[in-house]
Length: 114
Image (cartoon, rainbow, N blue to C red; front, side):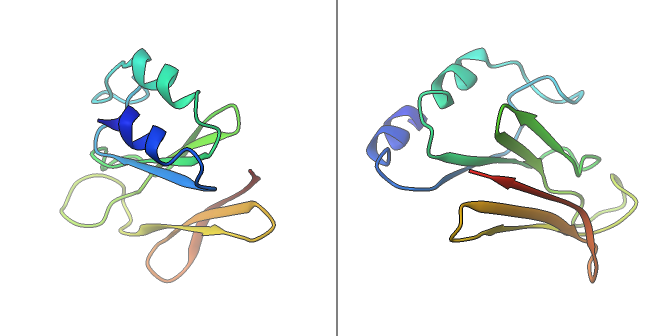
């Protein structure tokens, strides 16, 4: 399914992927899926991959220039000590800025070019 969607949108300028579980063993609940990474390497218009599931993660893993973003902790009584959400700004210049809002201030800002 994912390959068909990526192929159908290969002429679009910006693609963002949203996944539930991380597709690498970066965390205790992540899963190793080498086929996923082989697939996404074919599409240079993928700008970022977002992960959920890991309530104790709020960072960024980079593979080359592609960021894999964790979203922090929104609710419940487990996970990161703060509650918040991730913001991504895609500027006309091709610059991407991402940071966490916790909930009223920026945290862990990252800027990169696409």
